[in-house]
Length: 314
Image (cartoon, rainbow, N blue to C red; front, side):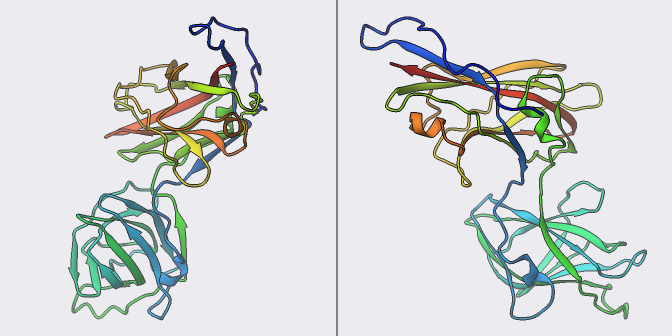
């Protein structure tokens, strides 16, 4: 925990041909940190409760994944059922599934007309589904997800009583720990699943209006234990410009994370991250840094802090 830290100014660091004087503001840390679910939001999740006129809807481009839907309240445990998805599918999505407490996997699916039947047997009453657009993408209009016995089993079809939107990525625990450099870490653990985006905002900069912002330096203090934890890599490191992804460049490095505590700096005095940096923007509450992590195996990661320095020419 803790508020924004770091100076709001710095001495001149030398001229640039006499036209202006470089100056640095920071480094500063964030006063707000959140774990933000990745994926295209599914509109009206409750539309998938039962076969009726309501629909849960998502439009997915090729390769784009949705957030997840958690289905529960079927009132059964210990009996094997198959999930059957019904609705209107413009293009067939790839369906991923996670039973509570387990890892995500891609079940064998049989698609036909307005139905997608998953061959995975569900022996419990709660599971998550996420969807990925293939080829040119797809439009998902999901009407219901029932649990049904194998053909000829005589088992009745069961409807869920609860459907909620949830994350299809690994959630950051104690994200507030990433606000201050103090060896208390925001942590994430999963298997072959990227993390949520760790979104850090409210850095409290006071760069003078009209000053030319020439770049950003972002230092991430992080750790991964090695051992049983597999190789860890950046997934996204980007400038946040509000609720939707901005036009800034993903600065994720291809380098594997160093085992143990370490620091890595992205950007620099002459790096605007592919976008337009204005003093009013970096001073605002919507400005921030978002980062996520990936691995192809079991992993454990921690973020101690994200320190941002704004470089200007005045």
